[in-house]
Length: 192
Image 1 (cartoon, rainbow, N blue to C red):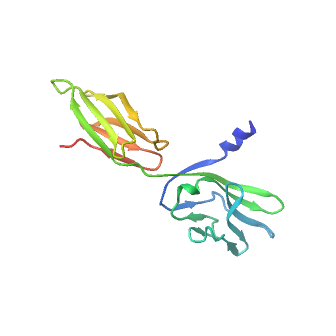
Image 2: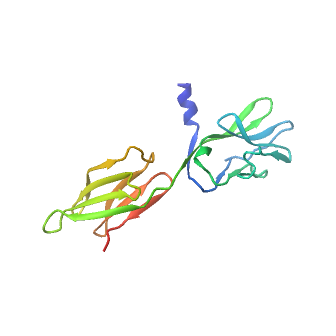
Image 3: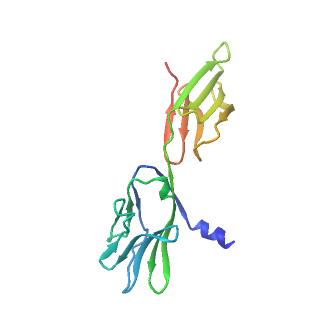
C-alpha cells in the first residue's frame, strides 16, 4: 500500500523527444540558512544544486540544463528518451522535503498515416477504410456507413510505439484517420 501511495504523488509529464521542457515548482520556495534546493533524477543524480545565490550544474547537464534562481524552475533542452525517469525538486537541510515529483516520459512523434477507402456496397453507403502508418508499424481496418465507423481488424508489428493508436471517424461525410500518442497527432485524409 505504501508503494501505491508514493506512485500517486508522482505527476506524469509526456514530452516529445527533441523539444525543450520547463519543469516548474507550483509554490514559492524560501530557503533557510544552510538549506539547498536540488533537482534530482531517479533519486541519485543531481541536475542542479542551489544555495543562496550560487548554483551548480554537473558537467553532464551543463549544455542541456538551465536553472532559474528566481522561481526554482529547470529548463531541460533537447529532451531525449534517456532523460526519462523521476525528476524531483527538494529542499535539503536537516532533512529532505520534496517540493514536486514528476515522472518524465519522453516519446517520439508519431509517423504520418495512409488512408485507403474501398467501396463495399453498390450504393456507396458502406465503405472499407484501411488506415496504416507510414512506418507500417500499425494498420487497422474499419467499415463505415453514413453515420459511424466500426473496427474490423488490423495488424500490429512486433515493435510499436507504446501509447500509439489509430482511430477513424467521420467528418463532413469523409473518413479521417488519426494516428496519435501522448505527444503528437497526425491525420490522414482520403485522396481526391
